[in-house]
Length: 311
Ligand SMILES: C[S@@+](CC[C@H](N)C(=O)[O-])C[C@H]1O[C@@H](n2cnc3c(N)ncnc32)[C@H](O)[C@@H]1O
Image 1 (cartoon, rainbow, N blue to C red):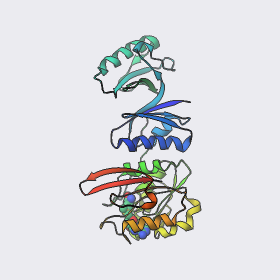
Image 2: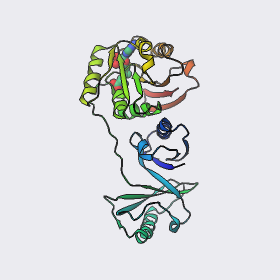
Image 3: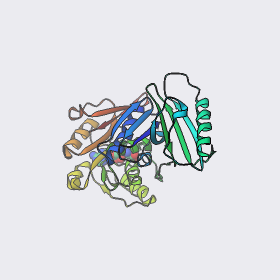
Image 4: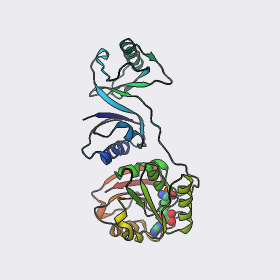
């Protein structure tokens, strides 16, 4: 089984690792993985760039070609790249001279391949990743930049794009699947889903919010499907939906019809039990039906810690 690696950016480590695993599982349910510090190793038939195109909290990634004890042993299944650069990462608890490792590996590979070293625009990046348990060799022949939507109309209650994108990925949807956000607000979650090739349906009981969402979606060239209604509309379209991903209203700035606890309980009773669900809400709400679901706490400031729940 091919192996790939993902070095996380450091923001929300557990969330970032689970996001990478979830994306891989959306294409290959047999994905297995290993997490060591900021490193996630994925064993799966999902190509690393499919994950990289979607993952929010990844800074470096590529294929794994094996492990090594000594630099002279490193093996990369690439024939004479035009140019290359070596990048070493020390994710272990020991002090290691990373520059020496990069220089020694560079000298060996330069002779082996007769290729030149290019720091700014290499055709191949060789990665040497050192953890407390192993030394991995990885490589990437392209750099991936996220295809991000633009948010033409913003609003104070909007959820930041990183959490929105990550939540979409935790739902394990893939291109062509349909996500519904029943509290869509300005459409941040819908936009991230559309930018990754999913279809989206937004619902909001506020007419103006529906209008903002539609305009944000159209501005990115996607087809808006936004319903001005309450989440009680979901049963009418449940056959079209593969997952619910939403940011539950919780504050005075976000007009709501009921308390957040009541909204979540009513939402849960309006959707099929087996439907994939990713919610974010303000910490402090206990929902019995979600007591066993996976939860992540996201600290924002002293009066706002969010909880992301994945069922
Ligand atoms: C926290 S905001 C969502 C923000 C959104 N994630 C964004 O990035 O813009 C919650 C939204 O839920 C809507 N809302 C509140 N109660 C509702 C209900 N019962 N049914 C549908 N929408 C509701 C509000 O109008 C508000 O736009």
